[in-house]
Length: 284
Image 1 (cartoon, helix red, strand yellow):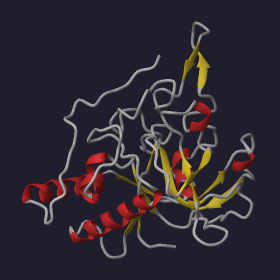
Image 2 (image 1 turned 180 degrees about the vertical axis):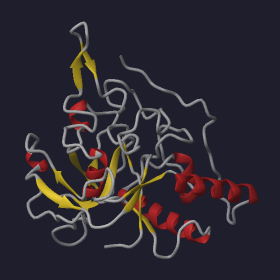
Image 3 (image 1 turned 90 degrees about the vertical axis):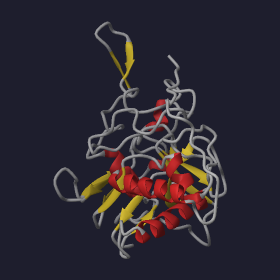
Image 4 (image 1 turned 60 degrees about the horizontal axis):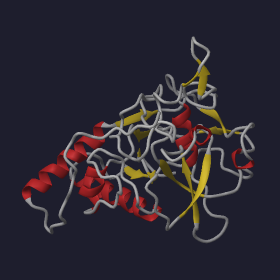
């Protein structure tokens, strides 16, 4: 059954004023504090976080192969939600999203604009003394993203191998619906972030809702991919295609697998593409 969750909150809007009015400044400060509170610390090799994981899928298309071991080199923090529209507008001064809602995920920005958001929010967080000069907000690398999506699992999805399973009556029932917005249970980018269940590491919407930008340039497969979790640059020059991960409300369940990946133009915009941030202590 197709349905749309509609956020009951009043739609967010912001008029760009320079300098910001006092009320706008206070609102942005609160949004920045909330943003900081919504990061999850990932420390590979400690507690539930394995130091090494197998990236890719031997059963998937060539773009997900070869499967290779990746060992992440340092702790980092990742946002439990995709960047919501109220935060994006407070930082960037505009909300380009088609599906308006203050806590809906922001969409319809380019990859470069997502990187600009990361740079601007880094400066704002430093000015507010919420992070120090050694900390930086950026897009996740593709390896970081898959590691976080898998949440210690080796299955197709973070909750298991199958998106569907037979119920007690023998009828096929979705195991994906509680975790991800996809074409089978959503008709748009209407829900607020975090409306569905998180994975085992407390991260929401890793399966579905919006495709998410990664920092990597697109390569057709994993031949020659880094094994330390770092970002993969373009073969030469600046990238024209980058990696997006996670699937969206426009996609059927196979596209929401942990290993599924897709190329996207650096200057492209889509109402099913957004991003989440990571916070790192130092760049590799």
